[in-house]
Amino acid sequence: MAYFGLSEISRGSIAVWRRNMDAFMKTYQVNFIPPFVEPVLYLLALGYGVGALIQEVDGISYPVFIAPALVSISVMYSSFFECTYSSYVRMYYQKTFDAMIATPLSIEDVITGEILWGATRSTIYATLMIPVLFLFGVIDMPTSLLLIPFAIPAGLLFAAIGICFTAITPGIDALNYPAFLFITPMFLFSGTFFPISILPQTLQYFAFGFLPLANVVSVNRAITFGEFSPLILYNILWVIGVGALFFLIALKLMKRRLTV
Amino acid sequence: MDVISATALRKRFGNLVAVDGINFSVYEGEIFGFLGPNGAGKTTVMKMVHCVSRRTSGDLFVFGMDAESHPREIKQRLGVVPQENNHDPDFSAFMNLTVYARYFGIQKRLAEERADELLDFMQLSEKRDVPVETLSGGMKRRLIIARALMNNPELLILDEPTIGLDPQARHLIWEKLRHLRSTGCTLVMTTHYLDEAARLCDRLVIMDQGKILVEGSPKELVREHAGTDIVEANATPDVIACLETAGVVFETFGDIIQVQTGTPQKIVSALMESCRLENVTVRRATLEDVFLKLTGRTLRE
Image (cartoon, rainbow over all chains, first blue to last red; front, side, top):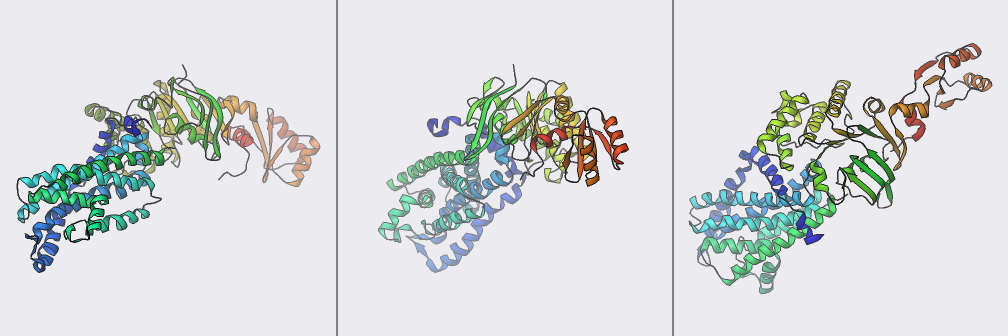
C-alpha cells in the first residue's frame, strides 16, 4: 500500500490508454456523432424553444447562458459512462483486464489507463463541441478555447468517480443507480439550465460543496463569459482536489475487486 | 536452475483451501502437466505462477525470483493462455497481437513483424485482418496461443489449451506445443484430456482437493499404478461368481469389471475356459486408469 498504490503505476498505463483510443478510433464515425448532434438539439429545444419564453438570465440571452453547461454535461456523460458501463464490459464480459494483468501491467496501470482514457474522451467531446457552439454564435473566441484544457481535470474527476462505482457494483444493471440517482439530478440542478443563485442559500453551499458538475459548470461559464471571480479559483481547486481523491479511492477499490 | 519451484505452496479463499501445501519443480525445456478433477486447484496454481493470484503461504519462485515481490519481471518473461479465451473483440486478429505487444513495451515495428510470424506459425495468416468474433473456436484458441508468444516467452503457461476443440485443431496445437519445446521453451499446462497429457507431458502431477497425489512421467505412473494391461468384461453375476472362484483380483465399475494384469493372455484364456465369458476386451492400461483409480469415480461439480 506504499504511496496509496501510486508506486505501482508505470508507463504501461499509456498502453492501456492506447488500447481504448484505438478501439474508439475504429468506430470514430459513430463516436463523433454525439458532440456534433447533442449541442444542436439542446440549443434548438432548450436554448431557442424554452429560451423564447425566458428572454434573458442575468442580462444574458438564454442560449448563451446554457452553452457552457452543455459542454460541462458532455464532459460528465462521456467520461462517467465510459468508466462505468464500458469499463465494466471490458472488465467483466470481455475479460480485457484479466488479459492485461497477465502481462507486465499492474492492476494500477490498467485503472490509471482507463481513467486517463475517460478524461481523454471528455476532452475530445469538449473540443468537437466548440466549433458547433461558435457557429451558433453562443460562445466567444478565442477565450472559449480554455474549455478544452479544463475538460482534462473535469474528465478525470468524473472518470475516477465512475471507476469507483464500477469497482463496487455487483452487476452491470446496478450501475443504473448512480446513473439515475447521481448523474441525472446533477444534470438538472447544477446551475445548468437555471442559475444556482436562485436556489436557497444552503442548497447553493451544498451544490458547490458536494456536486462535481456544479463546480465544473461554474468554471466553464466563467470561461465562456470571460468573467472570473474568487469563486472560480475555489471551483478549479475543488475539481482537481476531489478528482485526485477519487483517483486514489478508485485504485484502492479496484485493487480490492481484482486481487484474487 | 528450476524454472518454477514451489515449496509448501498454499492458497486459501476464505474457508476454502484451494491449494494445500504442494511442492513441485518444473525443469527447463520440459512440458509439465497438472491433472486433476474440477476444483482440484490446478487453475489456482497457474494463477499464482503467473503472479495474478497471491499465495497465502509457502514459497514460489519463478526464474529464481519470488512471485510475490517481482511480478513485473516474471510476467515480462512468460506467456499465458488462460482457460477462457479473452481476446479483444474490438480488434482484428493482427491488432489483437500488436495491441497486446504494447503491454510488454515491445516496439511497434518489431511487434508487427512478430505478429505476422506468429499468425503464420499458428496458421492464421488468412484471418489476419478479420474481426476476431468471426473466427471459429479452434482459430480463437490458436490466436490466444499466438498472443501468448508475442514476447518470446521462456515459459508458457497453458490452462486447458485444447478445451472444446475438434481433433484436427487439437492435433495442430499439440504439434505446435512440441515444436515450442524443441526450441527450448518450458511449458506448463493443465488439462482434463488424459490422452493429451500422455502424449505431451514429460512429467506431470495428479492433483485432488488441493494436494498432489502423484508425480512422474506418464509411463512411470501407468506402470506403477495401473499395471500394463486391463482385461474388461460385462459385470454379470455369473462372471463375478466365476472370477471369485478363480481367485482373480478384480474391480467393478458400474456394469463392467476390470482386471489389472501384466499377463493378459493368461487371464483371458482362463476366463474363457472356465467361465465361458463373452465380450472380453484386453487393452493397454492408460493414464485414465491411473487418474480414476487415484481420484475416484464420483462426479465433481
